[in-house]
Amino acid sequence: VDNNGKTISDSNDRYRSEKICKELTKQYGLYYSTGKENVKQNRLKEPDKTRYEIYEALKASIPRCKDWQQLVRELDKAGIKTKFKTKGNTTTVEGVRFRKGEYTFNGSKVDRIFSYSKIDYQLSLNARQSMQQDQAQSISATVHNGTESIVSGLGGLFDIRPAGSQDDDQAYPYRQPKKKKKRRYGRQM
Image 1 (cartoon, helix red, strand yellow):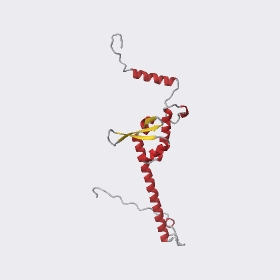
Image 2 (cartoon, one colour):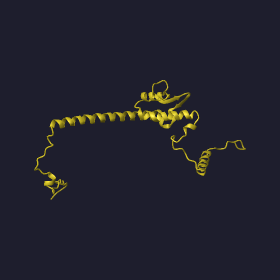
Image 3 (cartoon, one colour):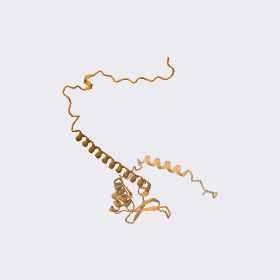
Image 4 (spheres, one colour):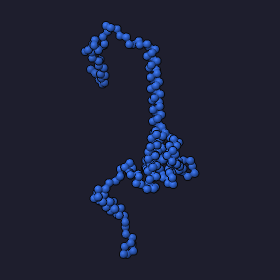
């Protein structure tokens, strides 16, 4: 409020504050954190300590799991309870919460990569990859068994070569492949 009783505009404060923060960061050699990997977790206090414990458990469990039931079991072994948030009175799941001890965190509050939709997407990718690996292994086993049976059925028919024969490459070293005749379009005289 100024001397006349009118409010002073604070619309420019955000830009001034941003400029000052950047100058202080540059002046004192500060930097923005790149991730949660370099945090000294032994120095953390609650509730951040619990949040990082949940983060580490999720980071280790999600790549190994193929569906939500498997993930919930893995987290339960680590002492983390999982609760799904539904949309209103419906059964449509729209979020996930993780509880360890007395602290509860939304998935996105643990880290943005642990929101319900992103975890669900990663689990579906894991399931798809494991199915593809299983199919590839079964196909390769089938092909291997099939080729073994064909080779044993032929009994080495193609292994024997007559002694006086020459390879085609040696007999005709100057052979050139036939060129395909070009097709001509239009009027010809």
